[in-house]
Amino acid sequence: MSLPVVFPYQQALDEFRREGREPPLLKRMSELISLLDLTVPLDSGLSRHEILDAALLIVMGELQVSRGGLFVRSGDGGFRLEASRGLPKDRPAVLDLGGMVPVDPVLRGPDALAFDAFGLEIVCPISRGERVLALLGLGRRASERPFGTEEMAFLRSVAACAATPIENGLMYDELRRVNQSLAGKVFQLHGLFDISRELTASLDEEAIMGLVATTLMGQLMTSRCVLYLRGPDGLLRPAHQRGLRGGEAGPVVPVVEATAVLESLRGPMPVERLPAGAFRERLGAQRLALAVPLAVGPNVDGLVAVGERASGAPFTDEDLDFAQTLARQATAALETVRLHRVRLEKERQDRDLQIARGIQESLFPRESPSWPNLQLAAESHPCHQVGGDYYDFFPLTADRWAIVIADVSGKGTPASILMASVHASLRALAGTAPPASVMRRLNHFLFESTQANRYVTLFYAELLLGARRLLYVNAGHVPPYHRDKDGRMERLTVGGPALGLLEDVAYEEGEALLRDGDLLAMVTDGATEAFSPEDVEFGDDRLTDTLRACGHEPAPAALRRLVEAAQGWAGAAGCSDDLTALVLRAL
Image (cartoon, rainbow, N blue to C red):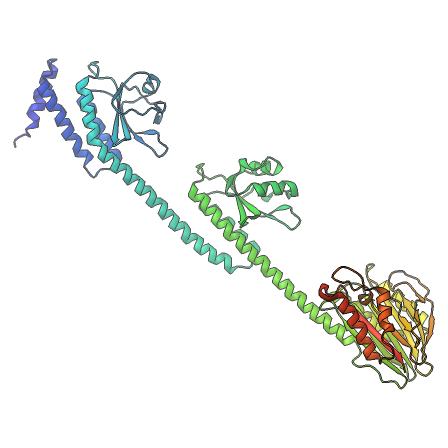
């Protein structure tokens, strides 16, 4: 088997070198052989590290140096050691030339410190166009001969041969990094999609927070997590925690500090960059390293704090993007739960109001009585779905009727229940004693059976039909208006305080006589205290003028005039309270 042509030349060169001679022709041939050898690994399918290592060995063999290194440009612009032979063990990982990147082979000179750290004598740039891709560094030659012009030319040839493969290798590495990043993104998107479906399918706040904590800890490879939510009172409270020692997430965060912390969060942030205070110190003591805002839009309603990674590695940009996206989904899911809870509460309130409205309507008389010498008309207009006003009239004997108008404190179901209690108690007590005694008993009952902030203003009268005489008690109610046929006005004020406020009260009894043409109007404060759009009260004077204008109108017409006057005064401002009125006309 014949040897390649280059081998005899190499053998002759080695023989001359052993004799201390190195003919120029043979030296050129040796360099060409080395360059030929260099192209083999550069164009091979080996890994980048194997290619760089083989190329470095070829160059070191040709120049007879015992140490060398190949430094490849990294993403941050520095030159990181990728292949080496014979370099000191305590060498740094990066060759720092003080920001000065050479464009031609550079011998040891002003940058002696950088050269000394690696034991280098010369550095040769490997460039593609104007961009330096790598640096080839070599130590002293074994023969102690300095690098001359011929060696410099050889290094330039080496740099020219290596530029394209190294650039391709860098591009390959960048593509591989991008592909890995894209693969990670796709994996995260699939995970976020699955989690989003679970989050939107749940209406359990605790389950949502548990899913978020578990997912975030698994993705970021941490062992601890705490969710803090801000309540309506502005305090920041721990709502869910995982992995904390003792299971204690810590106390609530005061309003001022909570506001400062949440306003500082515009994205995932290291805990150490949060505003200084007890909260940041608490998170640090729990070894929580990253704070992620819980926000939809500009409003931050809480945060998720996660611990350090188990590997000790920093969080990547992909980690931060995943955490922020998951936090947004969690916030949206928690807001959905809150709105669902509000809707359920609204439905419950609507049911309660319907019940209360039914109770209230059942208490009002179905129709007005028909008397030979008197007319009675009544209306009640609640300002909202359920009002606090009440009126009633019912017979005590064939010639005696009870008439009552009242205003119960509060609104909604509690007011309707109290109204039903007043209705039942009054119907049970009426006629068993004089009006003053009836009021005293009713007051005692309400004081004992209702809360301290519950009371009733009430006007109670017993009407003797034949004599058209009223025996009444005014328990803190708007005094009724008694207008005679000549337009003179009198107010029925005799009585005592509102019912249910004081334990033992003596009520006085008043009397009024209805003569031909007289009119008696009983109203709640929704009539006198109706406000115009300019915030002016309707008042007693306007109501009195309205009653005088009724003339000899029948009771229903006078009632309609009174109600329309009060409602017309309010106009676009709408009602501010329930309006109830009874009109009694003596024919």
